[in-house]
Picture 1 (cartoon, rainbow, N blue to C red):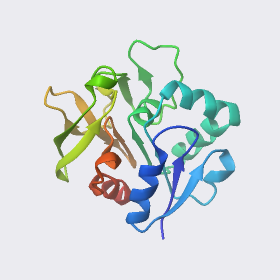
Picture 2 (cartoon, helix red, strand yellow):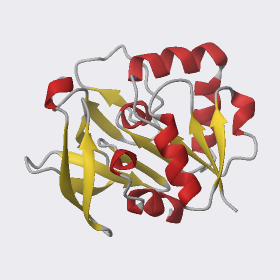
Picture 3 (cartoon, rainbow, N blue to C red):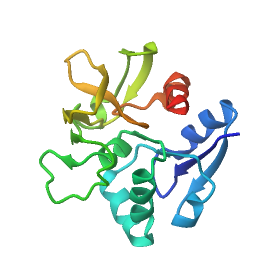
Length: 187
């Protein structure tokens, strides 16, 4: 049985846990570095990226996540999780990220909370998926090893993978479609 850690200091934790349980995975809530012991994969959910960074640094979780990423642990970041997994953020040069994937992101690319919406997008290898964009970022640039998996209707990059890591600017867990999580489990 695969054990999935879900970053649980802040953010959209419970919906990711429900999807993982539906897929038959064991789940560990990750609030400190020792919670990652025994986890095979890590999901970093949506939430607030600045808060993620501050809380993870305070308990040393950021260093452990970066170490495990370097060792090849598969990681999946949605929304704020995608921002944290990237190398940099447009317009926020001083905000620390974990540099797990060779991407640059732009925060709140769809506007504020009122512009949040659910729509269908085409994801390479899956097909049409209903997803929620909630104050969502986009990917503004990718490195050579990054594979673009989906763009929105404006041709902005909203889903990508690099090695065993996956990022999405949207929330597939909100709509209950398990296919993006299944893709992550296959990486």
